[in-house]
Amino acid sequence: MTLYIDPPAWPGHGLMWSHLVSDVSYDELHFFAAELGVPRRAFERDHYDLPAHRYADAVAAGAIEVSSREVVRLLYAAGLRRPKHRAQGRIS
Image (cartoon, rainbow, N blue to C red; front, side):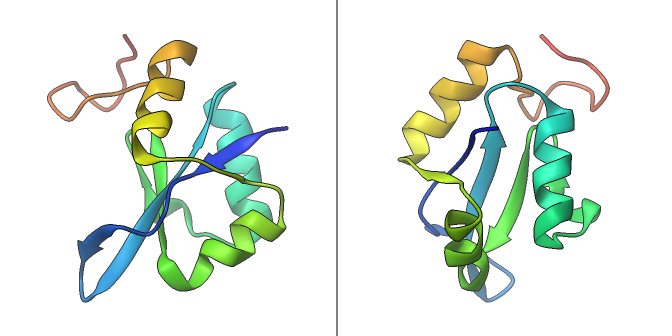
């Protein structure tokens, strides 16, 4: 199981956030997030949003540190990218 996380560089709600993704499946991503204790409500289209204070936890659990560009590239390459303008249930 390989998951990827970008640096906490995305501001929101007074915090900085990272994106946690899988390059295999959403099931793998949901399983990893659940093992970390990340609530399902943190899932947004094709990734989990993790606050900066959880970044080290994800890396310690095995997530590979990559750039934000690499997160997007991995999602597209795996066919898992769900852009904002697409419906939640559609994959393309």
